[in-house]
Image (cartoon, rainbow, N blue to C red; front, side):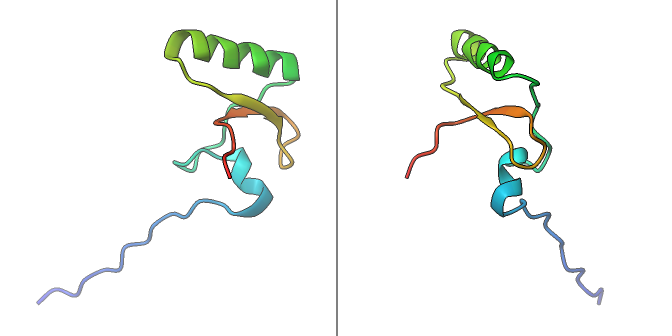
Length: 71
């Protein structure tokens, strides 16, 4: 009988670094200025209907887009 191998699942980063990564664990696209990020969010809304907000990343200090935070 074969011994079962334990499956290792990659976990998503926690804390301040989590906003830098997608839910798949890959880094989000960074924009140098807030205007570039907002323009890209607007294009995404027009094409896909996705409502995105922009924010400055504490990890890489670039601007990212993400879904609005809901409490």
